Image (cartoon, rainbow, N blue to C red; front, side, top):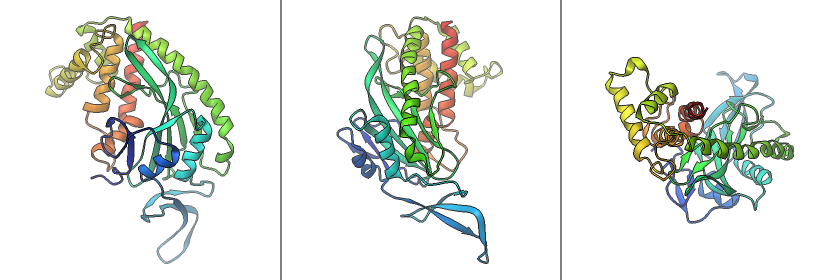
Length: 318
């Protein structure tokens, strides 16, 4: 089993990461951090060369319970402890406004993520609804900032639709400094802007549901997304991809609903389902199995693929 893959929790049906501790109902931050196995701290320790000479301005981030070195950081960097990240998240969204549905750590603990459900639904057409989630990611290896972004999840298939409607205001980002705990109100204001984008997402998704496309147009769409190229038409790999995504276009979860079948909305969700559940992970690291898939879906090549699919689907609606 990949390292840390068992330090996850989820509520209800087993989600895309497939593993972890199942809870019967949405958790409070205290319950979530315990169930996800995230109740450990990160220390910032000086680095020394062989022979005992101290490396000035460089420190190791070390997981306290396992003594695993997670990364190398500088003077300014301040670890945001998992417990403090949950408290920070509570303060941002309001404890009574969101409940935690899944959380966990990737790798040895280098990246911790929390997913909280927000009130309200996005209704695209008929019974095809999407729930609103807020995702916080916190890295302990020095390779990224603390990020908070909205992540819609389609109920019927649990596809993560974390696409940016524009580059501006797509997420709130904070550096690991001593002031991070003082910036709650600043982040809440940024998220207010992002929250408004849920309305834009709903409007765009509805417009996609009104655009009918046939198999030929769908094949062109897949090529524009970059899943296959014209010169790959005769390859067995390209045919396999086309067949798999075409099957999802026709019979994927929710794609046979009235008002969805045969539309640009179904085309986008076929690629999203392929990225989340079918496509092999291509993350260039030592992660394996569900660990790599989780990373791909949330931050990696899977997320990039869905962004391209969204952009090309919108082009069909113009």
